[in-house]
Structures are given as structure tokens and as C-alpha cells.
Image 1 (cartoon, helix red, strand yellow):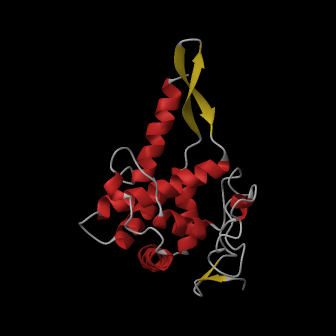
Image 2: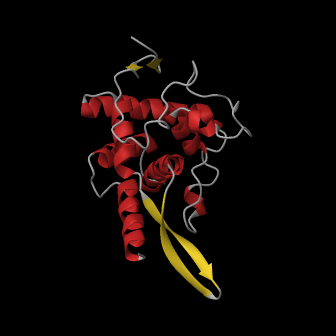
Length: 197
């Protein structure tokens, strides 16, 4: 038996099916769940960061979505222990609802909800056109984790618990349901890329 995440779930039996993400979905780079910023400022060290640590970091600062800054600004900024408790609670609830390893459920949700291509703007002279481009694996992981957190925050804002909404978001994305914010954003992004060919 290898390293147990949060002292409960084994990381050795987790399978990554997507070959392009296999190198970047890291489970245990350190003995702890987070690296305390030791990789800050170093090139490509972000690829060695644990997926659970990235999820905790996204909970503290999820990024803005459109003009709705009130949903993502200041509520959990800098509160890493609070974000860690949310992730631990979400993993326990996911384990209770699905009866499988919550790390495997998170990895499956990342694989199914991460987009393969997006649209970028290309300008030639005075004409601006959208062109579909492939997304790098690191950006795919970052996008889908951001969408998990933004979807959970949007559903939980002044209504319910963010832990339960994060669980619903991850399970819905893992089972390819369109009520998942991340999976619906993936389909929108890939449909826009297909339309701009």
C-alpha cells in the first residue's frame, strides 16, 4: 500500500485513461497535500503539482467569470485550510455516494469534462477571424478544475453548502451529465471550435 491521501484513500489503484493527461495528472509529488509555493517562479514546475493541490488552490482563488465578480472575489481568498476542509468533505461525500475511490472519480471527471480544442482570434490585416486550436494538457486540467469550482460556487452562492455542490459537480461531470457546469462549458467550447473551421 502506497501513500494515502488525507490518510484515507490509496493513490496506487487510480487509473488515467486519457494518454495526453497521464503525464500531468500527478497524485503525490510531496508527502503533504500541498507544496507551500515551493514551485513558484520556476519553469514547468506547475506540471509536477498534485491535482488535489490544484483543486484546493482553485477553491481559494477561482478566477472571474464574465462580469459576476461577486461570486468569485474574496470569499475564500487566502483561506487554504478552509478550502482543504471543503475538498476533504467533498471526497468523503463522493466516496459515500459512489462507493469508489474519490480520487478516481475526480480523475474521471477531469478526463470527461476537459476540452480538446478552443477558438483563438487571428488577425490578418483588418480582418479578425476565429480559428480552432488544440489545448495543451496543462491548460485542459486548469480549465476543468476552474469550471468545477465556479459551477459549485455559482450553485452555492447564498443558497447551500459549497461542499455538496462540488460533489454534485464532480459526479455529474464524471457521468457526462449536462447539468454539470464544467461538462456544459466543454460542449460549448468544442461546438464553437467546430463552427469556426
